[in-house]
Length: 290
Image 1 (tube, rainbow, N blue to C red):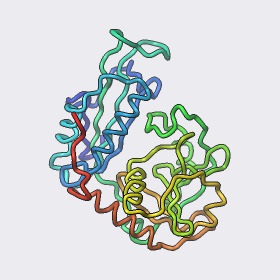
Image 2 (image 1 turned 60 degrees about the horizontal axis):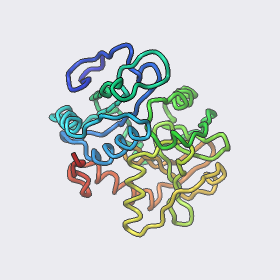
Image 3 (image 1 turned 135 degrees about the horizontal axis):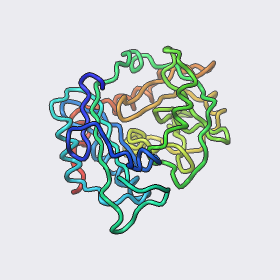
């Protein structure tokens, strides 16, 4: 176990699961990875909404917002800066793919893991990162598209393509060659002053920070939209950045042989994301409905 790591299962401090949990057997569940700052999860309302939507699409019932919110708050308390991972599985089940239903179904399993803040270099935010194009492609599956489900083998295969510490992220395309996302992030490009991010209606994850950026820019009448993003668009991009709910925004200064400036659009969005990740930032502290 990592130093300073804390684990709860169903509201109790422990690090074990029943061996028949469907998350272990089938990846039957969803998860959220959340930044903790000064004892709070600043983007918790957005995480909760995505978790709730993911459970609804998978047909996982019985997830109660109140105890879950209390557990998130309790495990975040006293943590100046850290990462909280929340996993919800369908719970224990018998052999076979068919999930239990009705009176057969037990409660979902709730797993919370608090880990230390990752030791990323400061220049990832200040100067930008180098990225690469991954050979592993994302399969098309509209039924699961957008979900933060537990089946992450495509990302595992993509991430094992490189061990060069100078490469911070890998960008993944779908089977048609369109850019979709990073292995741990969503991607935006700037073209003619407009922010473009790949649509995730056929594959990929609808990231929480991605959603915040889309809402924030639209509310301020900045040009922003989701689009199909052919690989050739990277060669024509004026700026590129990646984002997630833990790190905020990392400017991208290089992808393979292409280079990009750390431009004004990236700086503006990065500042907004940094602000929302601070306690009380940009009115994101409201609790979800319970």
